Image (cartoon, rainbow, N blue to C red; front, side, top):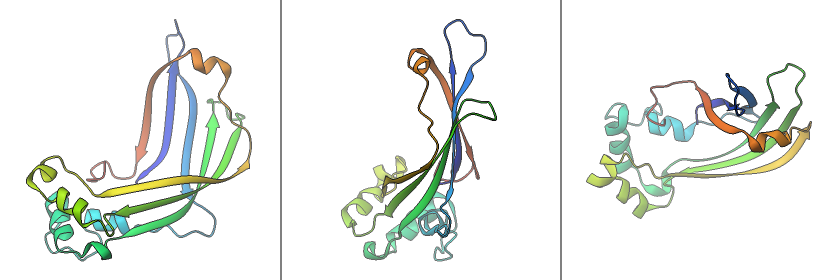
Length: 166
């Protein structure tokens, strides 16, 4: 939920340093609100939890909330993908519909997360799906050479590295 930027680096065979394959970023689509009902529930920011933050507070709030009233979201996001590190690299802008639910209507799943084993594994009854609605601009297909490269890593910039959602 908090990842806003992703960079994927690759190292060609025999190369000293990895190079940027692509950089992607996301933000709410124009005119779309940035609904954080699920994140607020998980982090305790909704103000409904009396048990405090952290995982114990989350599980306490989950146990005391009717599954039919757990949060769900649907939002439109704009995703921009830039291939390569050059400033004039092509950029593709896409619009996505992202839907998420935190155990809404799934009592058995919530009960599983609340078991001793579920708590030890830090299970969350959180699921989602995404669908690309439109490609607005640009073409950002990966270069043919990218298939022969070895992936060396991906980095993600997170707004809050201490969030229990990481």
